[in-house]
Length: 301
Image (cartoon, rainbow, N blue to C red):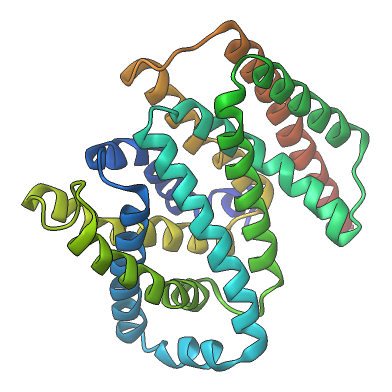
């Protein structure tokens, strides 16, 4: 198979996953006024149902039950489920409270956080280009923090929680789908508990408020699971450097939605911050491609 074919293999799944993630603000905006905790609870509950059906249909239920019974894997999954639940909660709160730009910034920063985590926890070395990229990103965050301190925590929380989540999942000896099944199953008791409490005690709108609301809360399971399955398929088929480029589809769509659809304020500090972040992202991508080509040349030699 040629190099170009390898680069393109898995492309439809990758583009599909990041496009769905990019348009997620449109979905969660339909649930505005509902507690973000309840939205996350239903996202967990209906994800479990869908994932178990997929595992059963693909005859992989044993992988899930074996992983869940393993104490070492369970410890990893407890950590990763806590991180992904935090990420979901902050993200949904940001969307439903008019902070789509802050959310998109978090996911632009995320790849650079991954590099930093690799240095801290895996003793990976950063080259000069990566150091410059991280310095530019940090400068962008500082500029935005000087004017938008009330929302910068959203960006940093999303970047840190998803970066740490990716690190834990990388270390966990379990596949993507069985791992997601473990994570959502471990979160299920808390999700069910909150959903029942909200149904009886929470005066704000929620499940049972209207058929429209119920449909979107139930659909949260598919919105969660489908892009993750597409991403897992793409990650197995294509080089990470190519995937690194495609991952910026998501935050770019979110950025466009925040500015042009929901008319979120775009200040001078936002402009400077995003300019610095986009420059950092460009450097990051160029460096990834350069290193990937060097590695392929070394293997070919």
